[in-house]
Image 1 (spheres, rainbow, N blue to C red):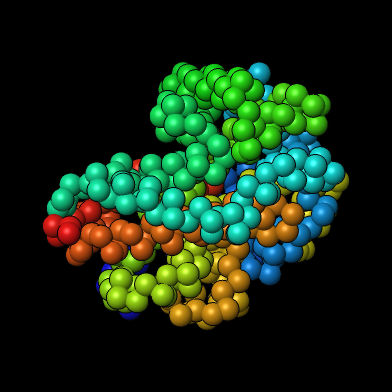
Image 2 (cartoon, one colour):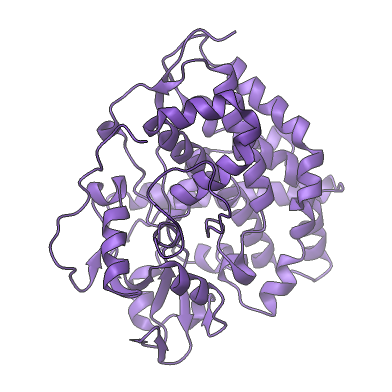
Length: 420
């Protein structure tokens, strides 16, 4: 089914302790390493480029259990001093002001905060906005060169999710135009001694100023939209200022960058399987099921964010000290042969497909319905309107983003025939 040989991600040496999760070969293709880790056991100590050590959960059953384990909390206050010494990358005061969003909350606070956002992302509302999303996708394709080459990140994937998000949350056009996509890179860790630290902190302050501008604007121009409701909740004492800013931070960053990355991983998977690409182009009705398989095959959310035990605990036979970080590998779970037949194959007919690309349990992504719709519209539009679409560089020349938790590429050079 595939036309390429697997990338040589790791050698066959025994697993070290901790297992390093870093380097270009690993980012290009982490799946051989995840396979070895699954075979060796469900929980492994790992080392990230920043020097942070964590416990990584691999395997579908172990991942599902961890995602639903109410002993594991998300609040950063649970982290111990060893974790905090290296993992609290975001400096103060921004850490306290922008990191108290849903991903870092536990019940009952998480339950209280989540209820403010769920109505904006219901499947029914997403379906109602579908025609508008299609208009946005077509406008971006209209602006591409009539014939390739083109960079589909710069020309499409970097813009479509943000324009959709702006429609959904009520971000006015004049403010949306002022958003700097580089601000989204503040979720990629840059340690205090890294030469890129000054740029990181500048982006962080720029994003914080932008959030303040959004809040001020929505306070003056209240409407029936998510941003207005969040600002109103703050003014009525239902949210703190830090919670308001953090939730807007999460919407602006987590609400668009992962979809950008998922568009790129999906396209790369299709380029690697041209027979499947042709089939999907010829049979658009296959798109919903195809998107589920593309999400499983290579998820933009490779790893979850931190979780912590509040006391020394056992996790699938491994002792985990209180306050050590526990992370679930969604990508490793989604390629587990004990749950999925022929898991490395891209099978657009796979059904059922209970992948974990959006997580599971109380932290299941509230924007999953929106992300699915965006992916279906984006892929269908690109395949329909760009005849002969193909990767314009060698597979080995794809530059994967260095983000710790995510997968994607900042550039995707493609070729295509003259579009109608």
